Length: 308
Image (tube, rainbow, N blue to C red; front, top):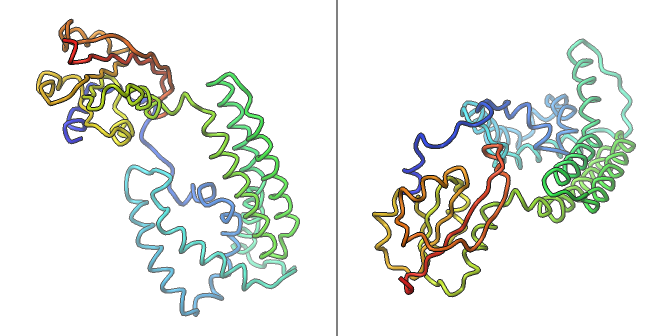
């Protein structure tokens, strides 16, 4: 693996977008959904929980790590997940301690502003299921040419549960229960039916399945050119090398050589591997790489060393 990453040099094409990412504080309203709909109201009750014995523990758990991930230049959505349990405990504590059917109107500019912001975040209970449902349908149709009907059903179910959470807003525990139902439906619909339907996105598992499908090759040696996703390395149970390392690594004990060549880099294949060592094409695979925002086409070559 060290050789694989060491070979990720300046040959990689630039990304079609910059590496700028919004701060996690802004993304929390999406990544922490549906609990994020209750986050603003919970912060408004901060004064009530300040004297609680558990509050310093939650603050020590959450705040230092959150500041750290905000300072990191690269911001992937899953970075703050380790402290989400602390944030969840804080929100649930505020929800359970809030009076039921409270109709107290906020006073003061800042509290009125926070109250208006809370009203806006409530809409997340319905807007997020709607947006994800529409997104799955559109992306599935564009990439696969089919309409994902089952994710539509689960998105609608999540929207109705979100509507029930909004209707029960004054009774916060009941509202949070419906929000949990909404999240469960959306989670199940997306991960069980929506994401698996996007087969063109799962390039690495499909390439690995092509290689592992050749059961006659029990100890293959795998070389890849034009594809640098770490998941392809992690999913293989054999070492993966870049094609530029072929001359150094081809003597490693193996019964087959596999070459995974992306179409844009195919012109390098004859320069790096002799004709008699290239084998034959056993599979062609098309996919879409989210990391680069490009469609990719692969040819998988196999050379059985026993036939040389």
